Length: 539
Image (cartoon, rainbow, N blue to C red):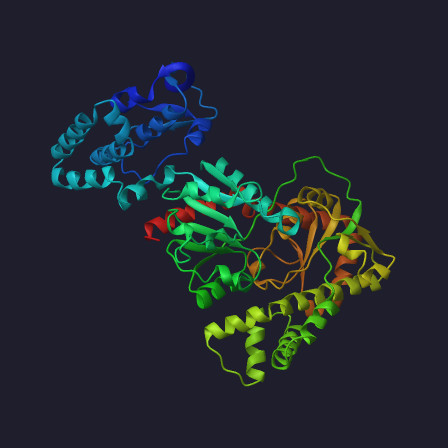
């Protein structure tokens, strides 16, 4: 027989448990869903983790502890403290008094609880230390919030409709995964909530505050000096999926506990070097198809993405002032001739060509002014790769309204389909044998398109990125190619389309590796580990 926690209409109340921790003595089996409901275990506490967790469960639902035959399906066993932990039990008691001091005072037992914990601390020779610690807990000093952070919710900003709602999908997928990992989630929906509602979070503490390429971290107060997020406490993370220079205006503010999460190692270095911000390599993940049955793979080769007209971007460059126009042309030429270079390295070479020496601040200003040149060269290579494939007679199915009016629409073997939602694109990849990815000049990055293609069981065909080195093997898990050697890509695609067994082998290998390393559940686990690391290092 084992003691098992079961939800009941009536049972042990929160106040009963708060006043008598002996109720939960011994080993107890607890349903995992209740642990998640309460926000998970708080491993920052030195002792009495089981007791503190049961208090949070009791706040949300009534329960009883019953003796039942052994059977722990869907249960987690919480055991008694070790002898070493027992000696530090007074610390957790101080934390609990600080957290629930108002309830204790309302029930006129606050002084009794304080006397009890100080008596226990004195029995272990820690009276003076306990007095100081208890004052910090009751006064909600920084130490209190360090201990309390794992029990606080995560605030996530969503609602950005950029790129067919992709950023909102990122936020929702990540939030759902964090919820499955035990975090409590609070959503702020930019699309449906007025900005004024953000004020409700002032002076609140969160386990983390997460935005997805969000401008909200730049919102200022009425004095135009202080930022709103100076008074929303907890580490703040902004996912950035374009080159960071596009977010220049939002990365120039300075306040503590702000981090950039980005999918490209070059961008990590750029943010650290030019904006002096904390940056972490943290690529987006993929979504596993909800339909587990094998779908007919009716498309040989697909590309889900937009067509950007290279010549339209060239016209914009020609409208620049003479000095900027010459630099932009050289910048573009360097990237065209050296497609493995990051944009910032290419710009450095262009500046050297003209004998210009600039400091970091001016370099960022120049790159920001020429940022559309990066799109220009991406559009150039996207067009060139597709032309190689189409000129051979290979049929390519493309998805997005921009293709219908593109120069490539003249090819009869370019099959144009309308725009698709994120959910629809997942089905497209399930119906594809191979699917193409051409990076937006992320030379050391990994994108959700890459993960989604592989999770859908199609062979990913992508231009090279240094992120793949040591993580995926070319020809085994996917097909990668150099933009400067795109002519060799055609034969590799044709060979896979004619060799069903090899195509399936690569697709399955890519899918298994991506399931292991690039799902949102994996990212949630990595993120919670990141929070713990930041806490241990004092952020």
